[in-house]
Amino acid sequence: MNVRSNGPNFMQAAMNTKRNLVTAALVAPAAAWLCIFLVLPFIAMLVFAFGERAPEGGYQAAFTFAQFAKLPTRAAAFWNTLVLAPAGALLCLLVAYPVAYYLAVRANPRYRLILVSLVVVPFWTSLLVRTYAWMYILGSRGIPNLLAMIGIEDVRMLNTPGAVLLGIVYGYLPLMIMPIYVSLEKLDRRLLEASADLGARPVSTFFGVTLPLSLPGVMTGVALVTILLLGEYLIPQLLGGGKVFFIGNALVDLFLQSRNWPFGSAIAVTLVAVVVVVLMVAMRIAWKVAGTRQVDLV
Amino acid sequence: MRAFISSVYLFLYAPIALVVLFSFNAGRNASEFTGFSTAWYGKALANTFLVSALQNSLMIAFTSAALAAVFGTMAALGMERLGTRTRAVFDALFAAAIVVPGVVIGIATLVALVAVFSFVNPALATIWPGDQPPQLGLGYGSIIAAHGLFSMALVTMIVKARIASLGRDIVEASSDLYATPLTTFRLIVLPQILPSILAGFLLAFTFSFDDFIIAFFVAGSKTTLPIYVFASIRRGVTPEINAIATLVLAASLLLILTARLLMGEKKSKSGE
Image (tube, rainbow over all chains, first blue to last red; front, side, top):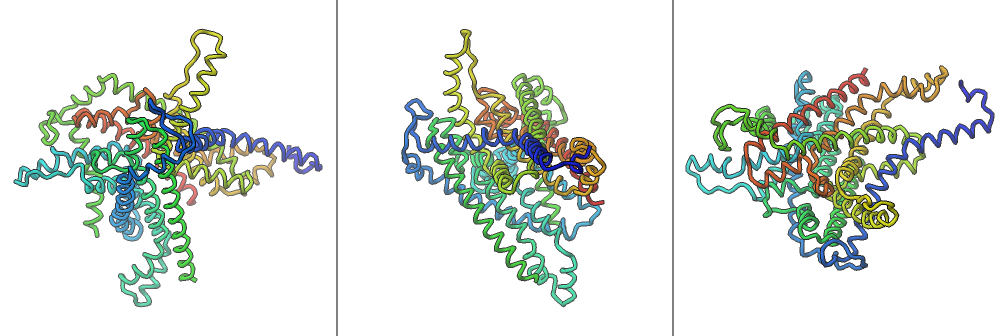
């Protein structure tokens, strides 16, 4: 049934049409889904952001920049997010890098897969439950209770920026370890041997060879974690207890409590803009890192 | 170095272990283990609100993951046949579906659906012949739609990576041996991408089962398990929550381990 071998031109054209139809049929459901549940909602959110709050809550048609002008009233949420998200990502990096290095370079290959699995698995279990675990540990009946037994009274751990940072490192550590691990695992061992053969001490091999070559993984990890943290809600909600709140918390408050949808939309639009900026900066740096790497290698 | 690595693993697992341990605590006290008991599990499973939230979550996770597995695989297969520019648009939209924070996805979906309903419901009411026109509203459908978006992007990404690693030669050999495209797909392509489709399905299921923030916005009056757990946590920490949390952990652990086994099989096969 090979049509191609005996197909004159019109046959070819018919096959092309059929091929295009099949392609269209294959992508149609996903395309529809993307349009209805991603593109349309974004347009709606933009429209709302330039609207007004109806007296009873919700949305009233208008075209005004008033919502954006009110953004400074939520400066604290933006400030907390823009400080604690990168800070959390960097803390994550400090813990993650040695682990990724160990897994990729030092670990016994026989156990490597298991050790890597043990890192990945927590990321796919409920963040709500994992954050709750820390609520339990840092809460008054947890560590502060133990400290009180040995005479250190009145230690408050929950609802502090430190608790939120701890929760962030705990929640996002696996996501930081993985890209760094992947970039270190791909690293050509002969480069390390060459460096050692040329008389470099392990420390200078690390800073001269290993670290620069793993920078793409580091960039990916930091960018991923920062972006996800910008929209974080659960960790500041449960461990920050309304004292350390992020943009996500302000959004939930505006949408589900005070029902100020236009203002909430304006904040959400701004949040997306911040995410896009972070993403672009990350790609810029990644591109630069990759560029210098190539120059170094050639 | 060893000590540091060990303590990181301890850091990752000790809090979870603590929750599991205290779910078997006989007493109510959260800081003192007074004896082994499964009473809190019994109490949790006798809670009808909890059980119905669990049922909702399972139904939503299964439906959205199944839709995502089918449509995402179709998209992955179709995308490689598209022109460069159209494919770039798809890639960008799928990337957006993954990168945009869940809280924004939730809000945008809520806003759009409420706006659409405000047009559709009065229109339905006028053209409806009976007395009681159907009222469209938030609920299972909107959660499945919003979860399906992320999940579809996830499945497409995983299956596309698998297709890219497939040898073209075996597909060409099949068509040279006079197999129709459909036969080639059924006998050559599908068996090779099936593990990644299943892995995508399980990851999507896990995502939906664990998601709180998107469902929080678009659930309307419905309750999913994470929404229920969140509400109970706010009412206060109890051993019953530990039992529920342990069950949630066990369920997602089972799913993710299966998914990883499937992906590992794929890796070892492609390594041959």
